[in-house]
Length: 146
Image 1 (cartoon, rainbow, N blue to C red):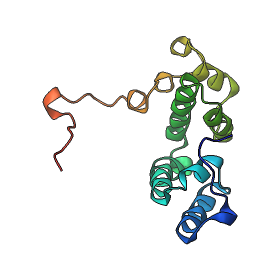
Image 2: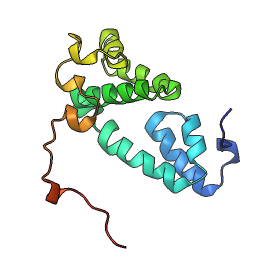
Image 3: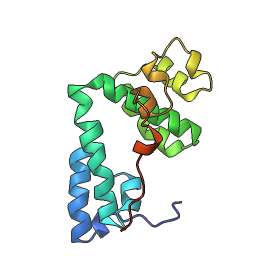
């Protein structure tokens, strides 16, 4: 049982219902995770924004990019031993074309030597998968005084 009570769609207030409508448009259903985040509708809406613009908008236009994202999510979920995330993201990965061998490789500890993954897919983070260059120390992000 969740530590935080889920807000069922039928119990949602107007602000939460509005965000739930957006969740339904993105995913076709309201997940338990969404029902937990709904205690703060802005948090749920904030989670959905990058999901839409980074992930869902690319499913048709750049499926290879989304496959890498899914492998990174699956690898992270495996490292975190998150059964919940795996239960959603393994099927999503299969739906966009990841094979069983690729998924098993991402879940395993020897993924770096797996013939089932290409070099981009072997990375444990999106930045590594995309080979983002490191900034010089004086060019890295900093907390800003408010």
